[in-house]
View 1 (spheres, rainbow, N blue to C red):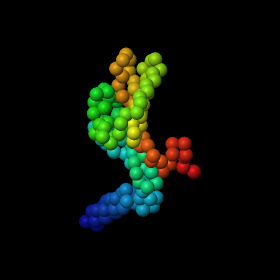
View 2: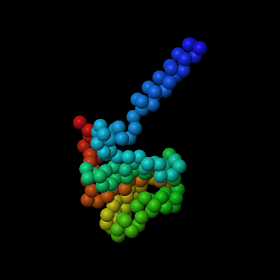
View 3: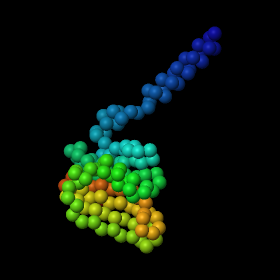
Length: 148
């Protein structure tokens, strides 16, 4: 009976330590303030990392599928994340290709820039990732500035 009580108390103490030491989101925010960026699962197999300005406004979103996505499906996802009405009028578009299997395309709108990384052969290339940058919103930590 005594051995069973010791075993139960040991298991209970172990569980207490396991759950008591696990950090949660609010612990990190209390210690370090609001996050510079957050990650969201926007679809099965597609994550989006959103970065913020010092005021908490969205400055950049990077969308990364686990595997390259067909252009039509990916563009529908982009319309969900940043609807055409939120982008403003299209200003210009530019695409570059290595001649092999990778390329980059960027489209500038009144309020955002959208850059697409592509992969594949021929004229139709799948989308590897996209970066949406909001104009006039400076990220809390710029791309060139690293934590010191």
